[in-house]
Image (cartoon, rainbow, N blue to C red; front, side):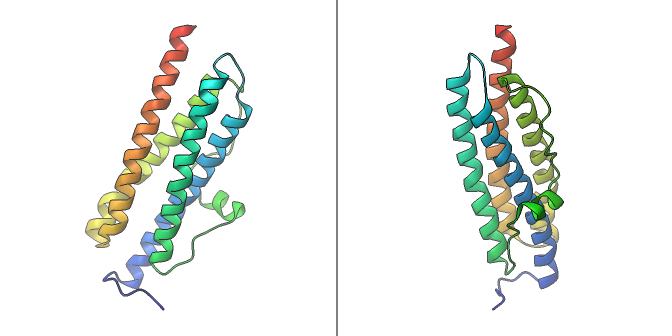
Length: 163
């Protein structure tokens, strides 16, 4: 049964397309953050190992929230790696070292890309599609990514100061 929540089917479809892209981006970033957690090397390993774990746990919650929003709009959430790779704005390329600065640089770039994508959808979701629920959801996600980006930047600054 289609949810009758005051949003046209056409608008729900447009929103779901953008939410599916966001879901793919979040899943790719989650995977890259897990990779950093698992493969980090260097003198700052222990602290950043725990830091990356905290971040991938936050991303896991975001992934679930976005997928559930897609379902609440009456659509199925994408759920395969192949589909995610076709939808994502992020690169799966992991060139670079396994040191903290390399991982942080790559993750920071991805967070900032997601921030820009979200910013571009907040107003259209609310004003064009009249979906204040999705607009509110991604506004909250934006705030989380901004904080995660800030924390990554602070770690990067600290690492550059040490060298």
